[in-house]
Figure (cartoon, rainbow, N blue to C red):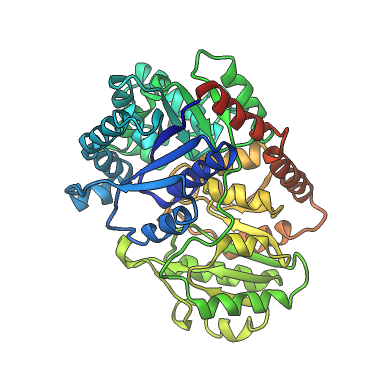
Length: 468
C-alpha cells in the first residue's frame, strides 16, 4: 500500500494539543506507512505552546507541523464573555486556510491523504473533508461522559432552545448511569453570550464524522462505551490513556525550584504528600487561598501546592503565581517549614510519578485525571471550569474513583472552608481506603490497555486497519 498521510487539525489549547500530538505519535509508532501533518493555529495568550510542539515533532520524522497563516483575532471582550465562543471564532477564521492546505496536499501525489482528524472545536471542518471526498474523524480529548452530554444537547435543543438554568431538573443523559444535577454542567451551557450556542452548534455536527476517537479506556467507562455502540452513531475508537509523560516546556517553570521540589520529595516517606494543582488556568482569590492554607496546616500531612492567585478583577492576565507571605495567614510559612512547600508552575506528571505523592487535590481536567490514574494517585475533586464539574461528578458518583471535596465549585462561588479541606485531605490520604484500592487497580488496567492485546491497543489497530 502507498504510504498514507493523516492531517490533524487540533484546537490551539494546550490541554487539547498535548493529547492530540501524542495520539499522532501513537499512530506513527504503530505503523510506518502513516505520516501525520499537524495544522497549527496560534493563540497570542499561549505563545509558549510552540515550544511543546517543537519538542515533540523534532524527534518524530513522520510528524510535521504547518503553521497556519495568522488571522485577525476576535475582540478581547468575547474571550472574557465566552472562551468557547472565542475559540470557535478563531477556528472559523482558519477555514479557508485549512481548505487550501488540505486540497493542495491531497493533489500533491507524494503521499495519499487518507483523512482529517479534527478536534471537537474544529468539527465544522467536516465540510472540507466531504468536499474533497476524504473521511473525517473527531479526536475527543475528553471522555465518554462528555461525548454523551454533547450528543444529548441537540435533543434538548429541539425541546428547550434556551440556555441551562440553575433551577432545571436533573438530566437523564443516555450513557451516564446516574441522573446528572444541572449544577455540574459546563459553565458555558448557562452562557447567553455565545457559550451555549457554540456547544450546541458543535454538538449538531458530531454525527457527521466517519469515526469518533476518544481519549479514554473501555474498562474505565464501560457503560458509556457499550451504550454508544448500540446507537446509530459513527464508529467509536477508545484509544486512551493518551498521555505525555514528560514536562511540557513552559517559561514559567523555574529550574532551581524544580530541583528543590524533587530534593524535598526524595527525603519523604512513600505516599506521605498531598499534591494540590489546578491546571493551566485555575486560580483562587486571597480569601480562598487562606482557607486552603489553614486546612492544609490542620490536616497534619505533608503537602506540595502549586499556587496561582487571581486579581480582584479576575483578569486573565493578572493571574499570577505567588509564594510570599502576603496571601497567607500570619506565620504560616514559618510553621509549615519542612512539611509543606508552596510553588509556582510545577511539572505535574513527574510529581504524580514520585513515590512520595499519596493524594492529588485536582481541578479534574481529563488529562490530569488520566495522569493520576496512570500513577495510582487518588483524587479529591475541586473542579473550576470547562467540563471539570461533570468529570468530578462521574469520578465520584459513577466510577467511584475519587473523593468528593467539591463537585459544583465555580470561580467566584462560596468559599470552600478550611474544615472541609482538612477533612478531605485526611480521607484522601487514608492508605486503606476503597478509593485508593480502586485507583491502584485502574492504574494496572491503564497500562495493560496500551499493551499488545489490550483494549486501547486493539482499538488503535482497528482504526488503522479499517481506514488505511
